[in-house]
Amino acid sequence: MKIGILAIGTELTGGTTQDTNSSFISHELNARGWSVSTIIIVADDESAIRKGLDYLMAISDAVIVTGGLGPTADDITTASIAKTFGLNLCTDEAVLNQMKERFEKYRIKWIPNNIKQAMFPDGAVTIPNPIGTARGFFLRKNGKIVTVIPGVPSEAKKMLFEGVIPVLKRESREARQYIAKRTIKLFGLMEAKIDQILSDVDLKIPGVSIGFYPHFPENHIVITSKNLVESMAEENLQMAEKRIEEKLGKYIFGYDNDTLEGLVASLLKNRALTLSVAESCTGGLVTDRLTNIPGSSTFLDRGVVVYSNNSKTELLGVPVQTLNKFGAVSEETAILMAEGVRKLGKTDLGLAITGIAGPAGGTTEKPVGTVFIALTDGESTICRNFLFGWERKRVKKISSQWALEMLRKFLIGSSLND
Image 1 (cartoon, one colour):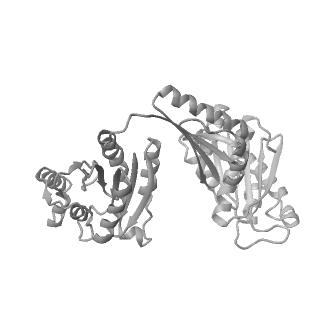
Image 2 (cartoon, helix red, strand yellow):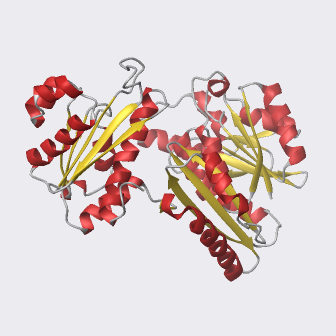
Image 3 (tube, one colour):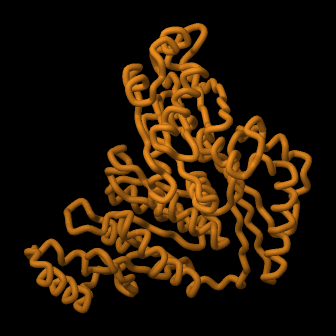
């Protein structure tokens, strides 16, 4: 089934709000074997809405519309759709009464404008909104399915799963296909290099499609396998996965919902090891990522941000002479930071990052993007030197990624020089 998405809102076309709904909806639909070929964003304008809907109806089997279901004057989605199909608007008394009861329950003053949220095109079936007042609806016109939900992301997500997807499954007349899906997560290779490595791999397996998706600083390969027989869908998926792993295994750190910080946290917990982190150019980003994992207090003792030279000396014991001779961004300083924070926290491991995130501060010898990352277990210490060609935020993000990847490889026993 081919599905089109129509996102409505002047705040979207004006750039004040990002359209996150369309990408989320598209991802979920593709995961279920449906194809999203076109996404259109239009303002709260009747003509634009009607033209967008007409176009999508012509090329799609179903259309999902988001946005413009509120009580204000610029919320014209329902009325515009009704006009497009030549339908009258009718008040759903049951929905209206439920809205009034909700307002009364939460002591919200009822305003006559709210009545428009209980009005739907003649023949439409409403879609409940469990967390908001704006109900959605769906109707079938000209053999096509049209579903309409609010633009508020939390409401749209909830209603997609509980209302829209069940409608599409029920109303579509396509044969039931089994879909197996796997996301392979890689780090350390550019997308073009991944494509080059896989160029001689036979991935032309019946019902299998391969997608490449950059998620800086990671790259994801998504394998989707479809078949009328469930066991064949799984078998073909595993075949494609094995062929990819044979070529890219050393760059694969996780699958599906894995995160690098989550994997590191599990490894630290399983090995009953503790960690302290010292950060300069990343400003606490590594610590932030690790503390996003529930139970991080079992392995993370502390994270310190030592941005100035003075803090590196006072908190971590980095000698002034070292800073003067080699600089704050150097292998010598990074190693002493890692050793110093490990001793300070009395932990098994010490991890440290120091670098030049830019845009200023670089020199001929140490240009912007120069980063040193050190890791110590008290007996041996390893330091890696990087030069990243990104802007400030990306330098910070990829530095935190490499720090966690170095830690992951250390914990699984791989060579840090791989």
